[in-house]
Image (cartoon, rainbow, N blue to C red; front, side):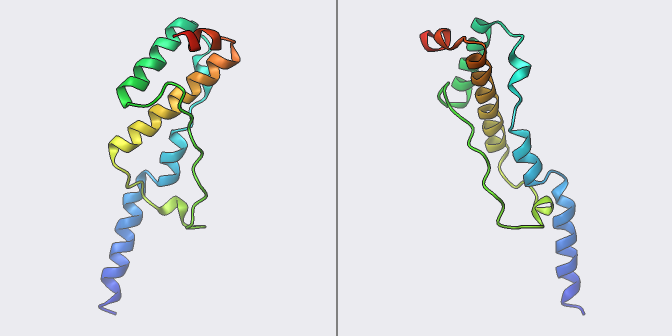
Length: 115
């Protein structure tokens, strides 16, 4: 009994630490491109290029979908233990990808390539 108490306490703390779970963190990186449709093409291209330069990625970077969790059934309980820098960089990649989809959909791609 005394050996299981620390184990139960550790599991409880791990579950409580999962206020931001890995699943939620990965879902936050998916950005809807429609939010950029009201931004003029040249301005959006500038914002995209600045964001790409800030995080050291190519302006044409594409967000890769998250792989399926190996922990089926307990995915919502796994805390997002990635470093804050990694989370911010992945969010920026999601935003850049959404900006590129908006530019493509609105036929601004000729302007995007020229810049």
